[in-house]
Length: 630
Image: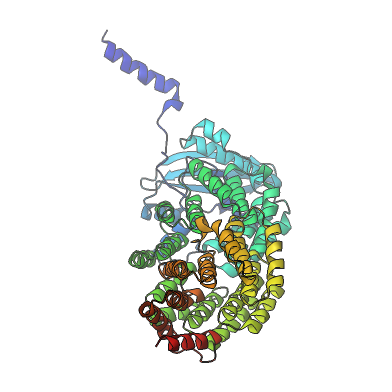
């Protein structure tokens, strides 16, 4: 007998005996479109809820790759359909084909008496071929989520995922999220609102999910993340802490989300947060979230060479997500790579990956390029957008102050604060008051600075508010109050990287300067050196160090610090110290008796402030000093 023939016959026979040896239905390169369940029960609680529950289950898998809701929404827009259109099996198949995905997961639920029957089918969206199917029964409504979880585990294995990873990453749905259908429905609605960028409606929806299930860990995490994105750090920390306390039963992916955000927002320990995001990215290499967050961590650390690669990977994994494009644009701005920033923004807009943050980037780009029309265009875009317009008005306040138009700046600040309060964002409003307090102090108006500082603290004692107020008071000459706030900040945030290595060294240095202890000030700022370029610090450590050298009559060292500010415009942007660095540089050169360079620096400042309000104390000083150089 021919051995080759015998071997071939045996393999054919083996395949009949052992059907599980067939090739997997999908590979880890394939993408799946998850459509809405067909609900014939008449109970609306299942609408959207079962899809969300199934998504939670399938997202535990390191093997399966679900098409993101952002990509689905973008594709629906290209099909001239509203982004929130319900994804039926037929519509899902078209989305699947348009996005070059592989399969559609189509589910249904029906009720027979008190029993519920659930069916889940995977269909190749090109050929219509059935790839796998499974079904489960629930004895009553309270067991539907349990049945859904069993179906998810079964379909994962049938689609080609190994039993080992199914077993390892398979936390029961009612344990990973909630056993309450109503709470899961609210949670689903919250994420849908998030994807639709409807910021005003997200927070109360997640709050409702929590009211329905007070032990819903991921609802707390989602609410905390929403507060963080809205600039409300105290509420964010409160809810992320609660999620962290309840995390024992969540899925592996949800644990990564909760623990990484806990370290990044609650403790502020950026190194622990970085480690958590790294492990998340290794475990779920097709998840764009940890890549984007890693880029954010590096930016907070002032390591601007690293974020672009992380953001580009996030975009590769989720090419329709405007947030990731906005992050990449911002990282280019921080590095003064303005052409790349603008090209990336245009690419995002061409792909309809729009996002509010992207418009803030475009405003920043226009500012750096002295494009007043471009800035006005972005402000006009924001008009009437709750939770957005106030941010652009605050930007306008900073821009006006940058050129010395302090009266105009104050008016923009009043408008921004009023809008933030209307949106019930007290900490955001407090930050606007804090920025105003800093401007007033730097421009030589201590009484006005103290007034704005008090207004800020009346609204919030958030981390950034308290630091900004303390620094403003230190500049305004109120050292005792500034010291008290700095001490409290140190106690409240003992592990916070930004507080301990940027904010506090800056505060301690400025307080030392107020006591004429210049060596102590320079020593305090040594710990800030590795972190001083962080966008969170706005280069204030550099500005204070420069001011310290000026006070100590070390002109050469002072000039180097102020030049550093002028060389990093993409980080400083329209912060007041960006304008004042020209004046301080002139003073440093004058101290070195370099009259030519001093005159040039003073002229740069006075040209920048040619339309400034004439009564600003620092402008009067600058003009008097410049006159003496003639």
